[in-house]
Length: 635
Image (cartoon, rainbow, N blue to C red):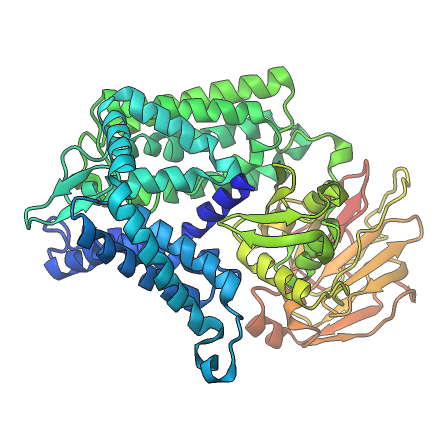
């Protein structure tokens, strides 16, 4: 229960932390060496100088069960009552962001308890959500009295810890770096970051304004600030991208193409923006040993940055954008590149050695029986379909006590955690599943988690477990031995530009996650059968059709990208499920102009979905008419 409570706090902290990049950008751009617009810096400091009430509002909203504005208002009122009450008792009590956190937590919990309270008719105006600010004010008066008299003691302890952390040199920054990474799997890194970034340390600016926290102090010119931020740049810009390179180098030869694009994408994301969770979650659950090494190396980078007297800071995260933005106000920033190259070498050598030596199952090294084929809904943007699959794999809505989410993960409390189908969860796109405590579960979804979570909530509220029309359960494939397609038995299904699958502007198809094949950029609105066989199924949205040859080879023709969202508009089916077809039989008529206007692309992948030992060979590219032979063979 305690861990779950702390995790909810960590998740709620994301709301106020999300304001930080805007504040930091305004402060930095307004400085003399940038745009020299003082009011812009003042505007940014307006956010940084009022973090306490921002935290109160954000945490109350995040802690409430439905993200209500009434909870947010109650958090603001709660903070004002608490702060002014404490000041009236003892002006020396300085709670900082703790006051905002406490006010937000109390307001959020009281909202969850009293948002639907009912009173007699003559008091009904004050019932429901209107009662929450009232009871929050009463609770904060009591807490103001308690903290006003007693907070001096924990304040002394906190000040002592702060002094040790800020003044213990390399040991302090190293311990913080290790803890920062180790707490990510359970989502509590936001808690320790909040203390370091927004509360520890004070600095008085030239205008006599007192600012708190490592980020605020660094941006406002504190010569002692930046040590607790600088060491992250070598990790996020160099170390973790090098880890991606090591995992790619260690991948099985036949899997390199499938994982190479993913590693390139998440490595660049880390380098440019400092967003590292996609990389960390790619090996965190597959190999905890690598993650422990990563945490230690983060501490090493923090220590090296401190030893070489580097001060640098960020407003969002330690990527190239923040590195360049704050370069001129940093101290010894070029040394971070040297440290970064050292860390890149360490990450690559250590990761590659451990992966190969211990046969760690990082992406691209999974056993064959673990490489379950995903159906389309697992990788598309159809969030309702994903919600359906996740709920089904989690044991249904009745098995979920509570559902929450943070940046990349679902946070759940389960009735029966043993009832989940972990394999099915991963098959439908999750990068990992983590069990915390006795009932808590975290499902690593990625940056689309907010949309998936909201779709799940909608289904849970309606107790709806009806499969969407566009959802098809993955079919179990039977071994069919080696099958082949010669140049004469396969014809081009549409007129247009033939391109390799790797050039499809969609990573799922381009990386071969759906299977081997090629693609067509069609110029003619009729899709024909490329083989003799039968129609396995025409998708309800008519944007895709599955075919099966006499020897069991299955082919998916997916017309356009993300076209499932068109819900059948622009498509006309010319065949039905189970119908026998010959080469050249018209399958689907497409309004190409409509699809071009309403979908990302009309590029049409043609995928062989159930290959085992066979390989697809693309012999010709460029523009061809439908019915052309010699384009593709399968051997």
